[in-house]
Length: 71
Image (cartoon, rainbow, N blue to C red; front, side, top):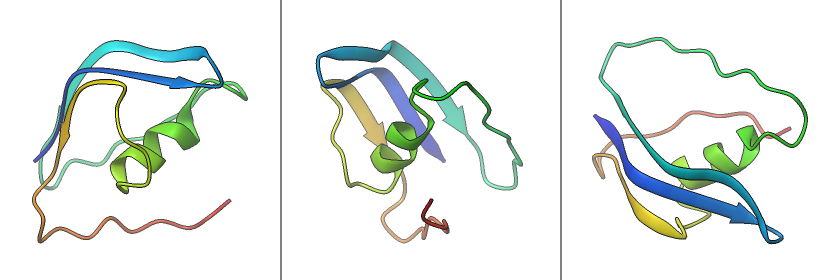
């Protein structure tokens, strides 16, 4: 399971997420939409471990691989 607990993410001083929490369970299929600058790429960077949370915690099983295609 991928879990975000009270996560806050900022980019360039702009708050993209504040105290966001979610759980994604194995087998779930989700879609992510939003306007440009909403934080979609930042969220994926956090999922990939390329970006740490400013506050809160992000976790996923270390044996999991997150498949993605760069923009």
